[in-house]
Picture 1 (cartoon, rainbow, N blue to C red):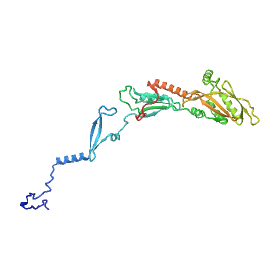
Picture 2 (picture 1 turned 90 degrees about the vertical axis):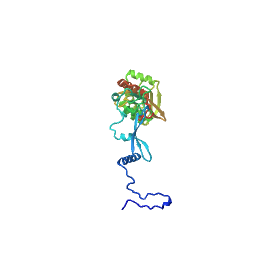
Picture 3 (picture 1 turned 60 degrees about the vertical axis):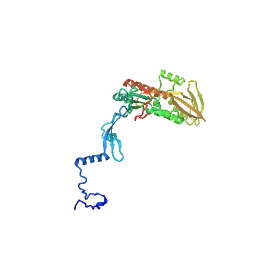
Picture 4 (picture 1 turned 30 degrees about the horizontal axis):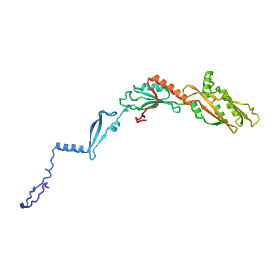
Length: 338
């Protein structure tokens, strides 16, 4: 079959000149170089190439950013960061918060990780005291680039079980039976103060003396004996103590007055795994309808916690040489403003 197609020609008088034949084989004869160039143009039209954007002098950004240039019907630029992150073998920078169990560990880990710009923040809130070191804190020079503030070491002061138990019932009203039972259960927490310490706390509490454990235990026993009785007489003394006389409902009770100290003292650790401290406790009661409601109040708990945090702040400053500030960082661990 021939590739040539015969065409008829109109008469010579019609003014048209047309080819007699057309050869399809000879129409698109391209050499190899031309085909390669066309293929390259096609790839550029639908593929992708790489490039670099110059970013000089912009704080927090690298000077050059690699990008992909995507071609096709909707050309666009694409970042390569996520693609590169798939092949990362180690973190880009140190970040996260290490939590330690005591001040000694806090100091040791700070000294291992610290830089010349590291700082320490302390929170003396008596309910949730803490100390936190920011390893990658900002430079001292205000014109230097900001740092991330995402690498931290934190110590949350862990309150002891004894402290939490006494704090749980602090200021809560208890009837005679409840208070007597509580006092007997917590008797090991109570202490007898030496004369000078007892006088010091008595002055602060504005009473003449601090009750001893024996007096408190006797008080609890007396309350147990008279738990079903009614208060007959309530006498408050100038010393801050009180005398209670119970009206007996059953025979066989001696009806002797019971001395109620205005305060007593605890010797308990404030924080877990630490030495005990002295905690003064005010003792109060109300008489209503012949029944007694008891309330105790731990004396100046906020001051005790603040003093403990101050002591820890001094230790951290001495052991690490870093500045210790009362407060919190201005940024969160992800770099956002606090």
